[in-house]
Image 1: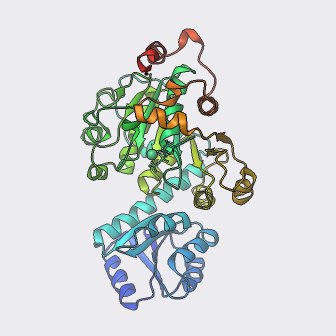
Image 2: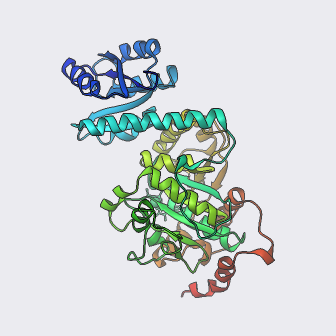
Image 3: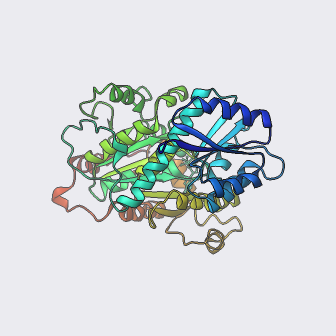
Length: 422
Ligand SMILES: Nc1ncnc2c1ncn2[C@@H]1O[C@H](COP(=O)(O)OP(=O)(O)OP(=O)(O)O)[C@@H](O)[C@H]1O
Ligand SMILES: [Mg+2]
């Protein structure tokens, strides 16, 4: 059958290989084309059999699953890897994804989970391939999902994902302040979406009540097809931006599927000049959906060895994902807080230039944080604010003429005085 998904199984334990082969044998749309007992054999079989999906065990004696995945990504790039790991190895997730794996299954998994992962990965790869060959320069099509009613949105806004493969490097700080800079200084209509669905803290930085509506309220209604407008779910913040919060509790993050995220982003795009998404550092399917949907991915790094190493790996992943050149921009945060590493060292290590730098200014940043007032408002003249404004200009384009500045932004400029503090 031409449309069967060709799967290669890689596991050093014969019983596991047999078990998986039998399980998948029940699925009419999946064909197991081979089984390898080692990473080495996997590479050989993959190049002969050209599977579309490779089920890869992470723990194998000669070459582990991560190494094998790294080599597969380079040698047989069309084979998408689903990594299998036992519980307690969750920290392998990110390494696997960075090695090029598309999914991560924790053993023991049910046959439903297994087949759903295979189908999902396959579908994603197909979609990516068609986007690459058919319309490489067009805006993302939104995965064929039916767009939700947007209350007459007629924008074709720019979507910017603020991402980093390492936590704590300043993503939220930059996302929040850049959003405000674009609204108040450039006159753009801006929505900031907290894409850190489990532990989002955009609301904290903006001093918002956690009882406000969030994306967790939006998604079920969206799925039921009942959403007329996003306005009920998006908060108008006095700083001149709109905010779509993360769910109030980590468990609720599970509601937010990659498909739902894409639809939300496309709907926001229609209503704004600029949509900024503060992403989490875990490299999961939802984060990938955001990165895919974005026009620009600002990847934030700091002058730390681990941040630099993860960045190098991420750039390789971005390449494999087929992101066009220029989509991923490097932003070095706290660029002057030299810890023995210089910017040129970073550039040499990752093999490309840093696109933007933002100075370290603990005083302004922490002062603002403790008061729930973004530093762009409380200390507009500070160098760190100027750096953020320059970044906003690069991603959001030129200043809107004074007469046409959005109402929100105008109001915000007037309301700045509300934020004055002792
Ligand atoms: N340019 C800067 N100068 C000084 N301090 C900064 C700067 N940028 C960020 N910080 C500080 O670094 C810390 C981490 O920032 P932030 O929470 O924005 O990072 P993050 O990448 O969003 O982290 P998380 O992984 O928790 O989401 C915060 O205490 C913040 O105040
Ligand atoms: Mg954050």
